[in-house]
Image (cartoon, rainbow, N blue to C red; front, side):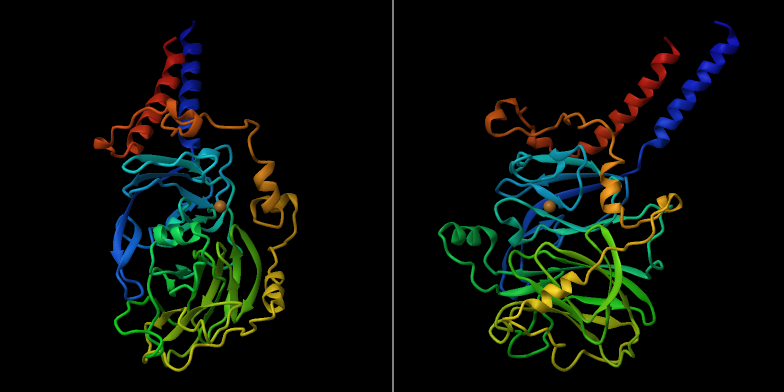
Length: 425
Ligand SMILES: [Cu+2]
């Protein structure tokens, strides 16, 4: 082989290697240690599921096509699976974290989830999917940002705020599960939490003293994106902020036609992004409210989540009664019409609009851009259970450290070896 052709071959190989390295989508890494903590969100000490000692858990912040790696260590006394609700798991169903496709992570074991948030955007949340554990917490936000080349259909917000609302019982998930297994009703929840915290004391009779509540601080004259998730187990909630409009902009992976709501019903499992403009005079703080729907509201009064929106120039505490809810216990048409009023962001589809989000996103991006391979290879740390449990390798739980670093190093080394082999052949 002449020197020239050798050099050109070498050049091709180097180019290929470099492009392989840089064509790979970026990784975002998280360590989740899932354990019990004692917390008193409603003033009663109880067992709560925390991630890295925190309740709610950390928000996963990713961008379209990122490889998300979450090393989950199970420090509970029972099996665990974390479900990434709304994440499409294309060709990676074993990363979905639900029973049926995934074997549970036994206590003391770890499992490293790795998946790509391929061709999607939006606001989601993750939660433990087994044994009614979600009733004890273990949830957190999951954001998939737009890639830079695809503009969002609104101005860049001045801040991004995640709000998790949900019904809550002072009994833990084990006690609640027992009741359900015995064929009993769970009964009325003991409260509604906002970001894992109890209600602000807007009413001395309804709310006991000494409850820790959530305060969201904002600057006047700005626009914030607030992502609201109903992480509860059974209660539909009406969400509203005193004296403010909620401009709906996105829901669970689709941008919507932007419409103002004074309040919005958010059912269990749903996620919505609103644009909140801080255009009030800050004469007081403002109530953020999540109250139960389709129930006798006077009976359910104490089951109301209340947090505080505080302008940096606020002149005092929030006061007066909470802003009104729709109050239509026996009439579901308001709620249904409200849901029907939500429209996906249409927009013209042309060859030139390929780079923007439009009505085809929900369909086209999740099908046509998928590769023709049907599945990725099974990860070598796969968990086996049931009829396949004899395939399970024993796990050394004494050194249940992160395998994430190792697997990435291995991947990089593999790429280098692959690129070098043909050169020295
Ligand atoms: Cu789901």
